[in-house]
Length: 111
Image 1 (tube, rainbow, N blue to C red):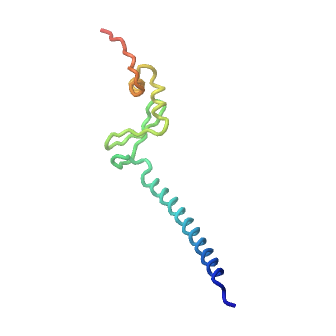
Image 2 (cartoon, one colour):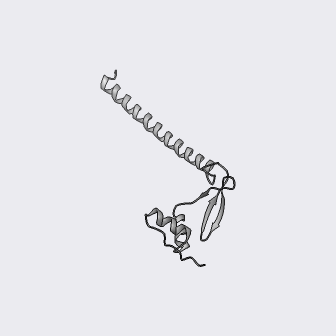
Image 3 (cartoon, one colour):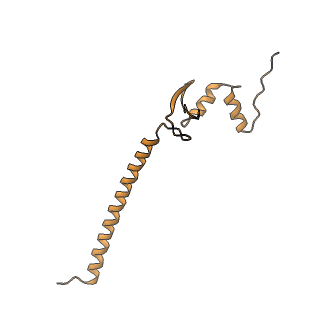
């Protein structure tokens, strides 16, 4: 018995859906592998010059410093920790106040 047009179309649609699902799964696997490859290639490298970053202690925070271009790179939340640990009148506290639109508190001059 010969299949009719509707059966042929149904089989074609099913095969197409299976191929599309397989292709999407392959692309997701490639994308995940590519993200992992890029992370491994760039992890702890300076975004500016590409040199390997060196971790340095800055108070309670470990910052990443580039020995080549002297760039300083902070992870999420590290700047806030540095500012909070500096206390009132510190350089970072004054910078934060200026960014927020307030004048830094003036220190009385001795002399």
